[in-house]
Amino acid sequence: MAKPLKKFVSCVILDLDGTLLNTDGVVSEVLKGFLAKYGKQWDGREAQRIVGKTPLEAAAAVVEEYGLPCGKEEFLAELQPVFYAQLCNIKPLPGASRLLKHLSGHGVPMALASNSPRGSIESKISYHQGWKDYFSAIVGGDEVTAGKPSPEIFLEAAKRLNREPSSCLVIEDSMPGVTAGKAAGMEVVAVPSVPKQAHLYTSADEVINSLLDLQPEKWGLPPFQDWIEGTLPTEPWYISGPVIKGFGRGSKVLGIPTANLSPKGHSSLLSEHPSGVYFGWAGLSTRGVYKMVMSIGWNPYFNNAEKTIEPWLLHEFTEDFYGEELRLVIVGYLRPEVNFPSLESLIAKIHEDKRIAERALDLPLYSKHKDDPYLSSSFHSESNHS
Image (cartoon, rainbow, N blue to C red; front, side, top):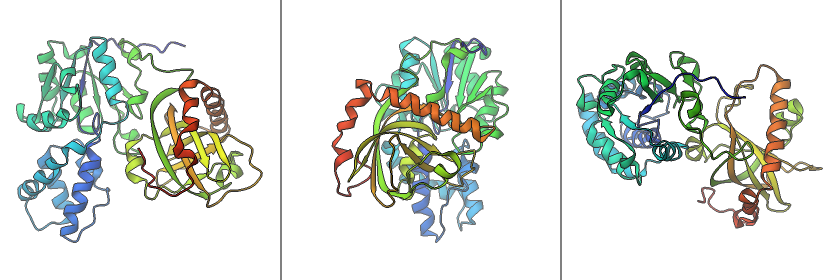
């Protein structure tokens, strides 16, 4: 069924850090190392307080939160060279390159609008081929009198694109950014970068789980054409580990025997991939290779405290396989996590996921990965094989 149009827009203004680039991952690594010098431990709790802030505001929040024996300017001056040396390691968020390519290919004008200084924005995007050419305008925090949540950055971007604010769609990950976009009179899609915070983004016109879930046609923009039979092909990615609990909650509550992997040691990989439902191939060293559908995330229905990896091997096993080495090749994406009103609706959806994945994995595009040597190697190698 066609989705009702929200509103026609003619251009898109994007935030950079946390929206297109996984800057938070690198920021966390740098802060972790830096705070260790002061005998403090960065635990990510403060991430919520620094998302969307200007660099100086973020520094002030960390200095205050940890009671550091230095001023915010001093802290920032010491941190920035370390951070800048890491710029080349910042990866695009899933769906970012796909979105930019798609809009650019259809001639939709785009601007970047970020609280970061202009020079920093240009350095960051220089590591991503072709990105600079996608944007008709770039506005940095040092080119306006006030950063987000002030609407000034977005209004300046619209001016440089030569568009009315009301015909612009803003894509943002932070609350200050959403507030700024709405104050500028623009349509705003929020892609919250901090987990489990979606309920705070009520002022946005739409809240989505990741850029993979954006439906441009809702805004009168050309639709993506890359979904195949209900699945979105992705670059394959790999994860492995011993099965930590066999037929636990999955089979007791849901009647679905999931073979869970421990999230330990996978935190950087898990931070790169949005929560949601994926599918691919699973290899058990002593048994063979099977079709697999899996969820990553907090499982809203059970309200997990940490991101989990719950693969379901689509095969009737007669026994449990605790402790066996499980290797996964993930080849496509199905849908975001959703909070279901009832257990019945959750179970029905999981069975629908299974049907879609089972059928799709027979397509040559996906079936070719069944022979990936990663699945059958029985030795314990580095799990972040790429």
